[in-house]
Length: 136
Image (cartoon, rainbow, N blue to C red):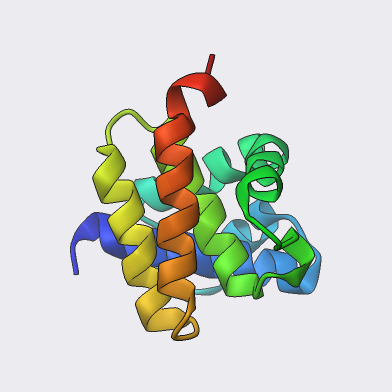
């Protein structure tokens, strides 16, 4: 797995833990730095900061374009993968759009249900098509 792939995975872990424990993702990052010898990749921090700073807008896009699915109804891991994938797709110009989508799908294949990769691919693919109007 590439360094960015590991960073995505770690960001997903941090965001998931924060949501499950109802604490700040920054508190989770701080605790990991203080209580382990785990080195936090700068891209992990960038992903966490990006998702947290844009979460309201990202969640609005996900709610609007996920046909028949509310955020609360989605499995937690899918919701976090979608947030990370959406942030990379819409707000990180260093990651090609296709890579953002395929990396999110790859995470879903490993971490979620059999149906999740197709759902995530479809929703992020739709956001990719709408990207110019979403960011206008």
